[in-house]
Image 1 (tube, rainbow, N blue to C red):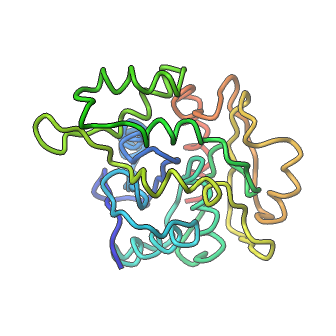
Image 2 (cartoon, rainbow, N blue to C red):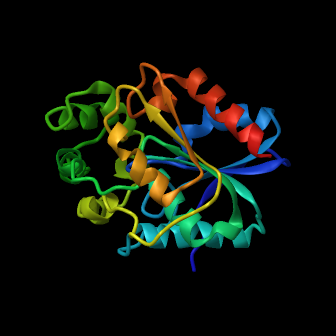
Image 3 (cartoon, rainbow, N blue to C red):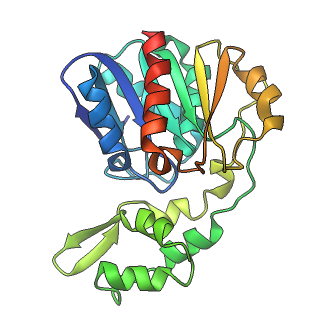
Length: 259
């Protein structure tokens, strides 16, 4: 079984694994990781399969991504870890908590619920898939091309972090776009009805985001009876980037109570 790529920040302390969202990568969380490391955590910034510097695979599901994290923990001999997952990473963390609870101490889920989500990344995925690096030779040209698919500059900036130089003069994408462009159903998949975890769990919602609704509370409690919920004021889905200090302090305070 292949091992996920990670960047481990800190030499000792309680292990905190951070799982990025769809089309993201571990580097998106580096600032928060350094801050948690300064508080005594050993932070594992992990690239999930088909993302960042981790391996590519045509097989892509939350069940497999949970297996990937379990394999990572076993390889690094990690026990009773804390795990923080945003969006897709939050769904991976939920599956991990239900399938491998013995590996975990507590989990934090950032702006995602255990429910099914309708596909909604199609235009972004089409734009990334249509990038032709035989014709496009710079990040600026990539940004201009993507602007016809993605109007928000901040979202394009996030997506274009996946660009890298395959060789001098030749750009490529770190994400496996050929697999991910057809992964909308897998990304939106809900937890199975019989899944459940009794681990301590914190769901962190962005006030301006519609990913977690008030009506989702019974469902969250069904899967995670010991779940707590908190809202980050004036933040959307990218709550950790939009309100970094409030998000960091909120998560840190809760994690501290778990260890």
